[in-house]
Image 1 (tube, rainbow, N blue to C red):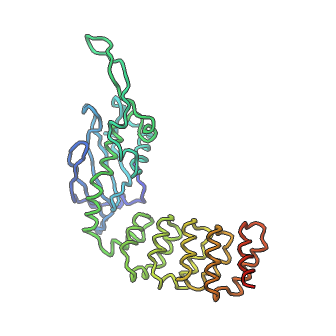
Image 2 (image 1 turned 30 degrees about the horizontal axis):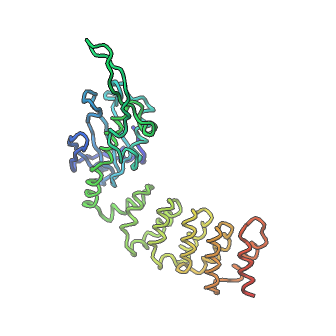
Image 3 (image 1 turned 180 degrees about the vertical axis):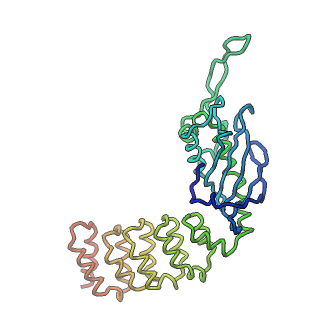
Length: 338
């Protein structure tokens, strides 16, 4: 069993089939179920798949249980010891093979997305033996070098088939189904989970009123989130939330730990934040790039009321530092005010 979420699969008690989908590779139909907890709260999508995964149709069928989260993103799979996955010449997967398959399935943008199976194999001359004919010339397939690192050695067809099953049309149907069951309760669940894709989805559903109601959780997401989700939060955050002194303190107070793009956006947001933002950033000037410092000083120039004695003292202290390469810009700033 490979699973990237918490223990949602263990909490899944109820199972209900919600739709079927067709594999574009095998043309077989498969059913997808919604897994829920004891009170009926949806947790995961699930499919118990049985599918051929080879070129000649003579291989063993792959038996595999696939789990997706409620956004249709792959999160794990399980197999039974009775029905191990197999590769070339029916050799069973070993533990490393199963781990590599899981890693591959987690990659939504795998090179397999843009390739046909014929594109992944180099056709090379080979000698084969045929009864009554002896050795004859023929062609055999070898996995291309750039693909080999991504897939299970000897299990190209298995990897290709399963990846396209997991990331194919089924995801669109899952999103459509999610929209049909979406509710405020479900959005609340998404917002307060530790999963960034859920959090991002929930944030997009919030209007200004609900954004304000969940400010503290959104700030927590901002502190722990990726640069992409931080940028989204800052762009969507209502002015009435950002100019709250407590919110300003929490966002601008962690300035040194943020990525470059988020720092730049925070500086640009100073005009809608609480006035204390300038004072908070004065203590973190050495964490600014050259352009960020210019923007910060430009804000102080346009808003002289924010150039308080405390801010001035912090900036003057930095001009005496030999470690900050851009302190000369601060000297020029103050020289221009004489």
